[in-house]
Image (cartoon, rainbow, N blue to C red):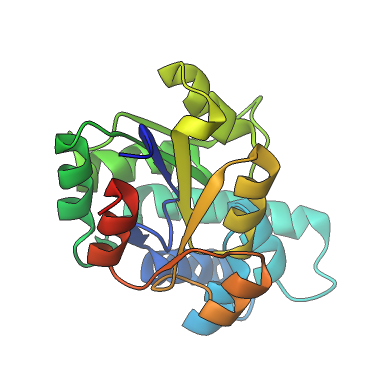
Length: 217
């Protein structure tokens, strides 16, 4: 086994969260009499944290005070509704279970607020993840490598002991900034072309293929 730790991105990598993110975005926009966004628009906005999502979702020229209100409304709504339609991608819980049985540690790093990361990991991956960290004070969000290094410190491991698995250009940059191997998955929020254009050289098209890449089969 090449790696001792698998670090997963959350949204678009192990959890399909797009419908709930879109619903909470639109609830927050509607609460402030602003026009809504469709699923594909929100897909393009996600990846750099929920504040960035809201800054892109509000109309161009929106005043900062209004953006702040929409952001607060989003957080309030999403805290209650983050698991309404969210579900793991096919084969992912089984994959995580198998690599853990093989002796690999598992972690999640995400630009989603830490409150939502902890909640979703408990709801969908109870007992399957050894560590999870979201956006919080003192840890710069991806593509800064802070959250990845936080995982390594937690497990007392080196960069070469771990692999990062993600679905976006932000994830590719995060792995590069950490000096860590990357496996990019093609079932998430970005196309294969975007991933390859971001420097991803190892791609997984389904959970079974990712399992083989992780376990060296």
